[in-house]
Length: 84
Picture (cartoon, rainbow, N blue to C red):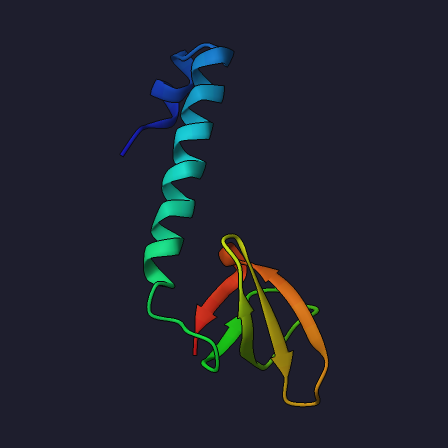
């Protein structure tokens, strides 16, 4: 774990590079975690405006099209999805 004092010693350019690496790693791990999700599976969206269960209708590389039980459709990025 990197301590706050160690981060404070880094330059702005080094912090930006570290941020890019962390974001890429997070996205990669999310893709791996969602690898088992297929069309027709139930998922939850981690967003206050999209509560409840959704069914995966279409899968793209970075976004999924989801349908709620009431029939409304939304698009959600991979980072917002959780397997139900």
